[in-house]
Length: 79
Ligand SMILES: [Zn+2]
Figure (tube, rainbow, N blue to C red):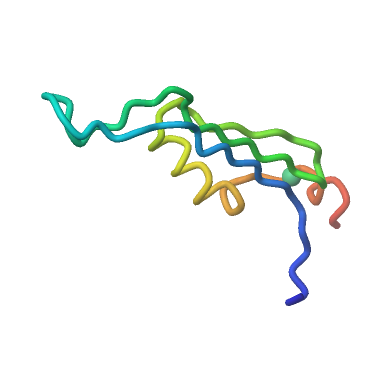
């Protein structure tokens, strides 16, 4: 362990998509189940979800939520 305090739980569902290999939609991904993500902060008990439902929205959410989450737990306790 590196001493990092785990303050939240990030759940990621990568969904179920497959890339079309033929036809005029070749190269596009067809989603049978879209990716989803959810972040639950263990300190302020807030659940955050992506702003959109697209794979790009979910990927951006996963990459940034730990820093973009505004935690309310520390605000009332600190100073
Ligand atoms: Zn929080």
